[in-house]
Length: 185
Image 1 (tube, rainbow, N blue to C red):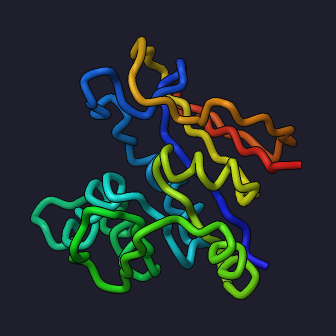
Image 2: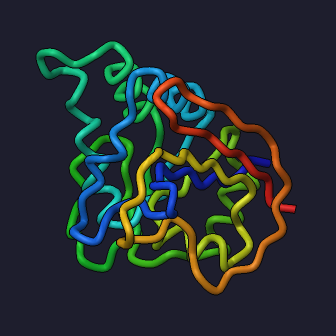
């Protein structure tokens, strides 16, 4: 059975974007990005809400841009090779390969996907992840905390959810970021 993994790059005070909607402060350096790439190689399917999909679809073409680093090109290849499911009531179509559109998040369908998938599934974006957390679907949590306080914005983790977590690993990066991995008990 595949694991459903939620990963987020967040400020030390727990936000994925600041109060103005910016996340430029979260751009990973090559060391952190290479680490993320190794984590993402295990993913066979990405689950996204509309906003996260619109943010991530840049990876469909980034590897072809002049000046793209090797680590970014590697991530782009990983991303393009995976299936993507986008949950949106407003999108009329998707613009990337291996992508299908669903109108609503169905926990039973995600449970069935987990049961039959040969590789891990990633849920991206805190809104959709909150639904997955509330439905008891998330197995692993990867938080990449960057050394910045943004003072408010969009929280990385859902409110109103209580879960017992088991530490499953950590890593400190030269640039000051830390990776914390947890499994849901």
